[in-house]
Image (cartoon, one colour):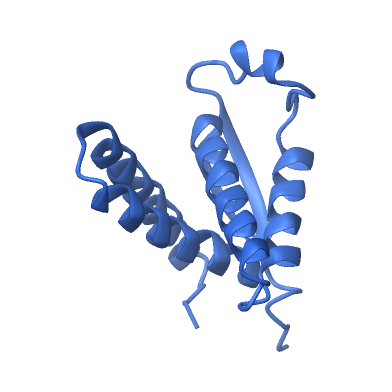
Length: 134
């Protein structure tokens, strides 16, 4: 049975704090694309990823103050997205990791490394489920 990229879903387990990094990365991606007129047509897809994260993470704070105590240290989440959504997550992590690395300071280098670690974690889990990048 062939299912489209929008129907087939894949799961990745990660620390919730890692998903917060993905959420911020996708927010950057969507904002940049919207400013540029959405030439890659990713605004809708990016927003769908962020909304999935909000739905799938119990206790997602409704305001900034809530993030002061959430997530708990070591809290894990299992994210379920379709192939197209995961492809955007991975490409955005690669893109923004390169941006961070190009800044040349220690904090940005650490951010870039963190993005690469998350990307590798996701790619490994998706590959175990038979996913392959387009």
